[in-house]
Amino acid sequence: MTGFPLVIVFIIAIIVMILAISKLRIHPFLSIMAVSLIFGLVAGIPLINVTRDGISTQGIANIIGAGFSGTFTSIGIVIILGALIGTVLELTGAAFKLADMVIKLVGPKHPVLAIQLMGWVVSIPVFCDSGFVILDPIRKALVKKTRISSVAMTVALSTGLYASHVFIPPTPGPIAAANTLYEGAGQPVNLLLVMGFGLLVSIPAIIGSLIFAGAIGKNVKSKEDIDINGATKTYEEIVAGYGKLPGGFISLAPIIVPIILMALGSIASMAHWTGFTFQLFSFLGTPIIALAAGVLFAVWQIAQVGKLGKFYEITNETLKIVGPILFITAAGGVLGRVISSTDIVNFIKNNAGTLATVGVFFPFLLSAILKTAQGSSTVALTTTAGIVAPLLGVLGFESPARIALAVMAIGAGAMTVSHANDSYFWVVTNFGTMSPEQGYKTQTLGTLIEGVCGMAGVFILSLFVH
Image (cartoon, rainbow, N blue to C red; front, top):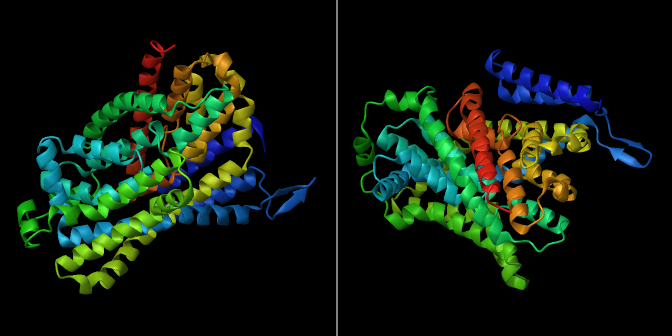
């Protein structure tokens, strides 16, 4: 199946999946896997691997397997290691120490803004999925300390991470998009200009999502909100139960060390280092290795408080908690892989000329369509950049500044929207103790507002950039 009928089938598949999860109460893993299989078959993916005219096409079973394993490859170990660090931070009381440090820094009246800005800074060198897992213990501790809405804090952290993830290098998506567009225009890549524009455009994005976070937190209550409201102990009583909290450095090390290592890895790539230095920092900056280093500091932390004997039990319990998150996230990866294996992306590419009439909004709309269709912000960024590059002259993106503006428009679209085929959706909803239905009201709607606000910033900037 190709063309517009395929788009209609895709929309119906997404609606059926949402209804199955939210109304029929079918487990998200089963709902997503079933919809992926049925949509793939209806879209014309063959039952088994076939070769026609020298072109090999994977069968639906292999595509499902590749999507499932691919998600585990990219984020599975990251989630496990990050969750393990988080469990240790909670067990030792270090998360509460970090929460106290954050409150002292920004004041007790602005915890939602504080966690959003933390996410915004951390995701400049770190993928938003990894950043959310790393910062989640601090978010939870701040919720317990301030009694602020857990949903508001979850949305603020998620959108803070997302803003820099799609707008500000050295995350791979904006870098790849910038390289493609500048090369398409026959110009040297002006990464500094892209970073500057990214900082500017991310401001309206995080302001809009911050306002939304505060509003949605009053209407949606997660399991964490219910548990905290029903708790009989105060924050101070909970902290007192830990005895003496770990010091500031040892509390921060399991979080800050992975961030520094990943930042160094990004710098090594962006600065085009060579030789052993490049290999070393690229290795240490790999999320799996960086978080493994964080786990080592977590082990040191747990030894400092005399609870090293419980580390086996902690690891075992963490794996039990993380299991459902991993499988649902992998199912989202399956849906994304199945969609990208159909002809829907080619249909969008072939009809790009129709969208090109909307000028500066063309890269945004195209990127948003691709993001919503296949789930990955990085894929949306890179694919849209490849489509837009030959059209830069038609769209009026010819100067270095206007090309950087096109990168921003693509980035705004690449966050619009995060739903069930996006692994980040499941990371946020599961760690934020929200149901899938609540996830659509918070994460999906929040990323829509954030993307639109980001695009509004791009449009305003376009009035002054030539």
